[in-house]
Length: 301
Image 1 (cartoon, rainbow, N blue to C red):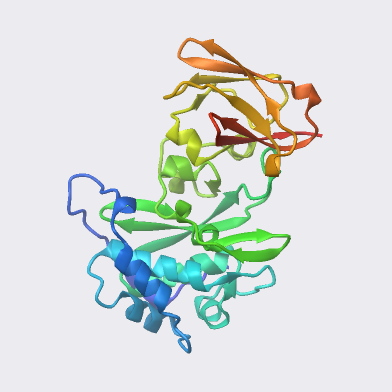
Image 2 (cartoon, rainbow, N blue to C red):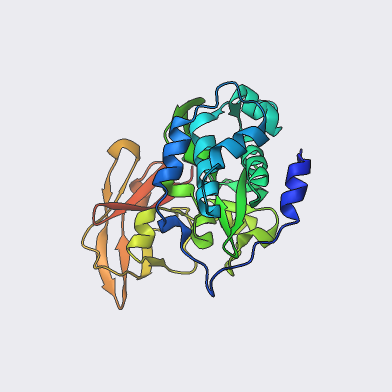
């Protein structure tokens, strides 16, 4: 269910003009003040999103600072609970618990009162260890926020923590704050193609068949062969480009179980990684290059 409120309708009528000829990298700004406010403001007794938004953002001059304090407060104070029924912002604020839709709608509501244009995006997400290769129905919600003349993507649910055997573990992550669209779509695919916010648009089938790419993948400048999928069905993987020489490559299970070293073959600007796929039992495998985890694959049953 989509929750439309008066405050949100007001905010969506506002278009924020860019103050520069190009979009600023808002991730790199100093959010010390915003984070301090979010971490020290418990909002005990506050059940009105408008009041909470106004008190959190009071004295913060820029949109980025105001969005940050709202985003960080939601991530730090709302618990993920599978049994939560309502995504209504007032109910989420009152109970301090929600699933992904509740997080996203609360953040949108708080942004509306701060005059920040924010949308809720519904779509697909790769979540579990076996998510690669297994298509699902729409299963997640996140946000797009318009600041400094550009749309940014954020996932406040995943920023809040993670679940372990259906139990929520609070653990704030910076990884999902104003993420580059190309990196974001590695784990998220919107139902509405408008919200890809990039030229690269996967079909649903392509999305779920792609390997999961981690930060190390981008930091090392890795480029996989075009037809590479996240399904381990061959005894080699082709890496077409890499910014750094690859000196070691190994597949491993979670917690370092069942390691499978690769033989590295240099091919032009890239490499071929050879491994014993037939010896690998079904399940999820991580690929480490030079000691850095870069990709996740799945060996089917």
